[in-house]
Length: 68
Image (tube, rainbow, N blue to C red):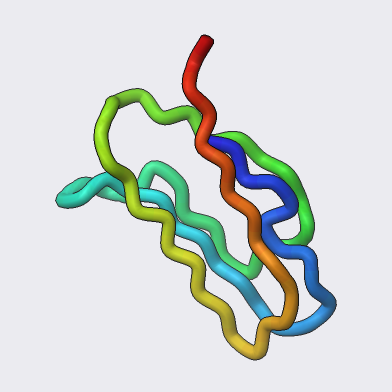
């Protein structure tokens, strides 16, 4: 899973968590700045991406990629 420019805004704070139901998050980031990053998913299944913001203005893009 790749997050592209997870936070592209000038105000507020944004946090992102990625987890499979009933499991610990495989990624958890708080007070993120504009950046690209990739999270390796080791186990097949459905994952929830939770984005929370406080006073945030901007956008978040998340892209799931299938291995080649």
